[in-house]
Image 1: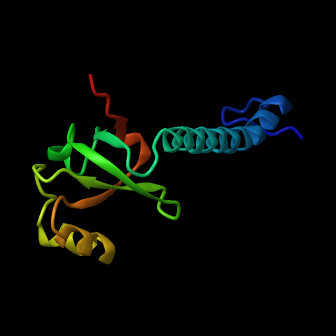
Image 2: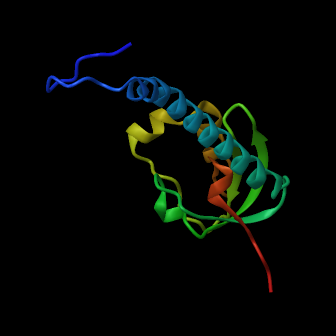
Length: 132
C-alpha cells in the first residue's frame, strides 16, 4: 500500500513495514531486559543463604544504612527480596510516620524486636561480607 507523504511525496512501502515492526522490536527489547533483570536477581539470590553475613549497598530509601553489616534471613519470593537483620549498633530505619505506614505488619513487628531491626532488601543491595 502506498500513502501520500506529508509533503506531497509518496511514502515507501518498506518504511511502512519498518514502522509496523518497530513496536514489535520494542516489545522484544523490553522482554529481553526483563529476562536479564530476572536473571541478574536470580544470580544475586544464589549468592546468599540464610545466616550469611553481608553488607548493604546502594540503598536509596535508607542511605544511612549503606555499608552496614547484616545477617541474611529468609528469601521472600513473592516480594523478590531478602529479609536481613541489622547489627545492633546500626542506625535504625526512619521513624517518619509516612514511611512507617508503608511498612508491612511483619516489618513493623520485626523492627520492634530486641536486637537489630529487620528490613527487606533486593538481592542487588547485598554484597558478601569478606573477613580478612
